[in-house]
Each structure stands twice: as structure tokens, then as C-alpha cells.
Length: 354
Ligand SMILES: *[C@@H]1O[C@H](CO)[C@@H](O)[C@H](O)[C@H]1NC(C)=O
Ligand SMILES: [Zn+2]
Image (cartoon, rainbow, N blue to C red; front, side):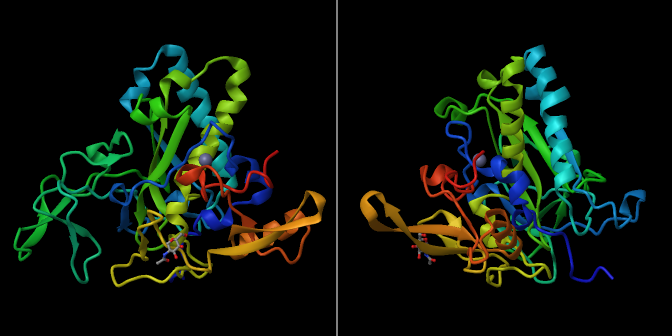
């Protein structure tokens, strides 16, 4: 029986040993920021997957579908070939082997953004409704999501009395995949401000387990190098960025679930956890992250108290203890430097960088 056991959320099952280097931060190469809440659509309702040839229980490797934005096709030929023929296929190939999912949903069919940021939910109806109108374009980061990946627009009149679908019906969506990654190559404001090759984030999460079902990765064209000696570094950056989009992000800690599929952080009736305005993030519970104080012995035998944030989900604890051969370790320490950009979005670099 499928029951409640669903897809395993990606974050808590990251294998420290193989992925440690990938989610620790190399200065100047990653400034992952949890996307602002208004850019993220939560609780997207997907239908259970139709029985297909893909559904054999042992074949639950993560399947990622890459969709290239037209901006990638406008890059110079050498960059375009690098991105489409090497960087992304190789990164995806690796990540699909490393991650698995518990349960398939499908097809991936994204929710439309509203023309204002006003949306409503009706009792006993899994979909969200826009007040008045859906936006003409639904975005995932800098990318406009193709119309055929979108659900039908659902709106409520101004009074809220009459609600219903409007406009073109549900598109076919993306069949046979667990996660859709939109890849673009746009010189955005962020590319100008930060010395980064690429950045990425999730944009929509499915309703049952809060697992990201779509995200984007934007490459900053000026930083794409087709020099062979730069390839390994770029590939590692692309893998690292996709891991943020798949779920390793301070913006999602409050959405992690346990093995039975239950949320590790309490929810309001809305289905969302509390939002912490001062952090600009959904507030996680102690079942996900704890603050612990370490005593540091600095030169001359002087002791200082050092407070750290530690990820404490069971599999991370298990792997951290094994990795450091330390059976009393509370969990794995998160990065505490770099400001809201990198803070808490990476493993502590002092401990997990090769
Ligand atoms: C919000 O986050 C700050 C910084 O971590 C913390 O001190 C504060 O207690 C949090 N607020 C709530 C309501 O949890
Ligand atoms: Zn990062």
C-alpha cells in the first residue's frame, strides 16, 4: 500500500561523505539565498502517477528533466555547447544516481502565479485560487514557465463568492520526472553584483511532502568559461547549485519531513509553518536544527563559547557520527558566516571542505 509513506525529502538524506564538498561553500562561487516567500508556490497538488513502465519499485532513482530557456540558445556557440552537451547532462547524471525518491507523482504540472499576490484556498479543494486573475506569465526565477507545463488558471471573483477554472485547460505537464529544472543564461542584476558563475533555487513544492518539483539554475554568461582547465570547477559549481534547488536551503528547513512523511515542524491550519520575519525564513523546529554551544580552546589555553547551528535530522546525525567517528556528535554543523547569503545554507566549511 502506498498510504502515507511518500517521497523522501531530499535535504535530510544528503549523504555527507559523497556530497560534503558539494554543499560546503567555496567563497566567491556560491551565495545561495533562500528565494523570497512570494516567489515560491507551496502545496502544489499533483495527481498520483499513472502506472507506467517506469513505476517498478526498485527504479526510484530521482529523475530530473532539464528545460533550457531560450536565453541558453542565444549564448555563443561554444558556451551553449558546454552548457547543453556537457555541464548540465553530467551534473544531472551524477545527481540522479545519488538521490532516490520514495514515491512518484506525475506528471509535474505547475501552479499559475496570480496577477496580484493574493490567493485563496477553499475547503476540501487542494488547489489554490487567484483573487481576480492569474498572471500572464508564471515565473521560476528568471525563466518564464512554458504554458504547457501549467495547470488551468483558477480564480475567485472579488467578492470571493464564485470560484472556478478559467482559460486554457491543464497542460500535459512533464511526464516521467520528479523535478523540472529550468536552465537559463541571463545576465541578471545578481550576476552583476556577485562574482558568481551560477545560482539556483526551487520555485514550486508539491503538497503532500513539500518536496520541490521545480526549480531554476541561472548561469551568468560573463562567467561561463569554456577553457578545459575550468571544466571540473564549473561542473562542481553546477552540481552544488542544483542541490540547493533540490532542497538544501535554509528556506526549506521548516518543510522537512520524517521517515513516516510527517512534518518535523508544526504547521498552522494554512499548512505552512510560522514565518520568522527577522530571519526572512520559515521558522524550523528543534527537530531539524538546534543551537549548541561549543567551547573553543584558543591559543594560550583560553576557552571561548562558540554557538553553532546543527542539522539534527536522524540520517544526518547518523552519517555525521560515522564520518567523524564521534558517537556523541549532535548533528552536522551549518555555516555561520557570510551573512544571509550563505549563512545556514551550507555545511560548515571549516569541517567539510576537501
Ligand atoms: C527568529 O529568528 C531569530 C534568529 O535566529 C531568533 O532569535 C528568534 O527567536 C526567532 N523567532 C521566533 C518567533 O522563533
Ligand atoms: Zn551554495
